[in-house]
Amino acid sequence: MPQFPNPQLAQQWRDRIERFAQSGLTVADFCDREGYSVASFYQWRRKLRSSVPDRPTGPGDQPASFVAVELQPNAMEASQLNDLKIELPGGAVACLDGNATEEQQRRLIKNIVEALSEVAS
Picture 1 (cartoon, one colour):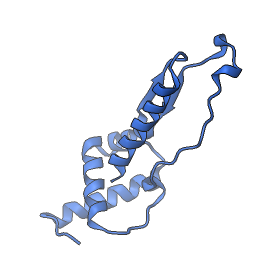
Picture 2 (cartoon, helix red, strand yellow; picture 1 turned 180 degrees about the vertical axis):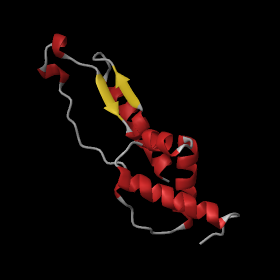
Picture 3 (spheres, one colour; picture 1 turned 120 degrees about the vertical axis):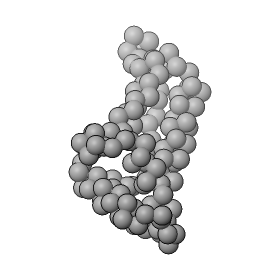
């Protein structure tokens, strides 16, 4: 395990991240309640994950998972098409209007998967 310049600070962040996993809150809400930035949370979580190989994940640390959704806009009348809205961990929301092409939908989902993979690593 790599040594951190300040082991006490690293332990404080391990404890915070564990409290987050048990809290049921979004990262933004938890950080606001604890009084530190979301960026610091993600930075420390990334540092601590890379320092502990093959660590089992807890409920708040699980990798993002997606449910397959089959879009069939031809089966719907144009007036029934809705905006595509995907709510992400941490409170971010990705949206496309009902006129988005299948390629735009695929690109949005691909970008979300890549972004979440970067956050999780």
